[in-house]
Image 1 (cartoon, rainbow, N blue to C red):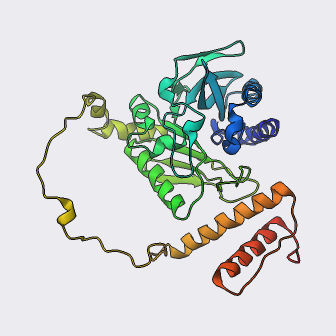
Image 2 (tube, rainbow, N blue to C red):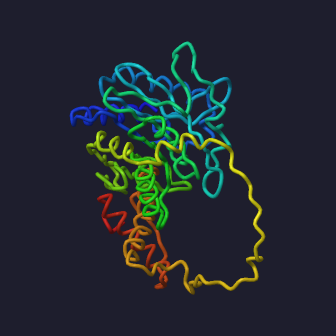
Image 3 (cartoon, rainbow, N blue to C red):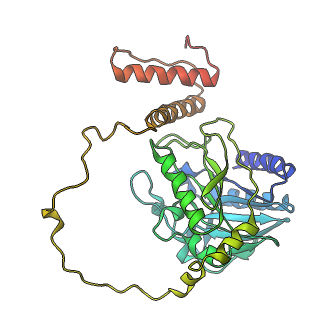
Length: 357
């Protein structure tokens, strides 16, 4: 936690000098997202709280968003704290918890719907909830966390309707083949649908690779287009900095006849029965791919490169973690071992290690 805090403070100083108004750091950045069952340990929770308060005490006009676990009445939440001018302005719990495939957050956390409005302890008293909108004077912003964006109705929809001009998303979304393009489109569409700025910061090289690889993606979007994107798969990490045109976004919202009408549509949906033919008896119109796992579109080369970068980053992280500078690999001459060898070579080159190892 101490090392993470020091790195956050170092980057805060850089971003402050760059004139940034709001600095976003990844999900659970104070403890690490992949800390596993250690997140339930009171010592880690206390250390994260102390680090967050220390960071808050060193903030000025620039708002800073950091991720950490927060306990309220015995319940543990995955949270993002908004810090500014020496204070904790509010803490936002993650609303929706992924619990399938490689994710199992409900093992540790509860969803934001169980949060009470105020977080009170001997060290802290601040607003607590997933419905917070923060006023920076000339613009409003709100926070949703990682999985929240991937749900049918993300919290950012309501937050934008309540006036948030920019949505900030601290994330720890792992890298998979083709996932990055899908994630970018998701952010683009949400920023376009809400006429908002959308800022995303994902966990990167410092996370564990026991189960997952994280690419460290950062991006700033405005009404459906990317304004700035950081480099992925870098050991040092990267930032994306951009200006968001608040006046233009507000103008576009006012010009949209349907945007504010949505606030009136709060009645529950009605279930309408429709008698139709059993779909199982209908012929398939969608073609079936003979080789579904081999990309065939114009992005094929990029997708294949993505796979190699994920493998390389995972190996680099593991080599760093165990202090290893030599590898033993059996090369049969087949495709599998050849690919493994190429990944090892690339990892050694990026780490500056002698290929003789």
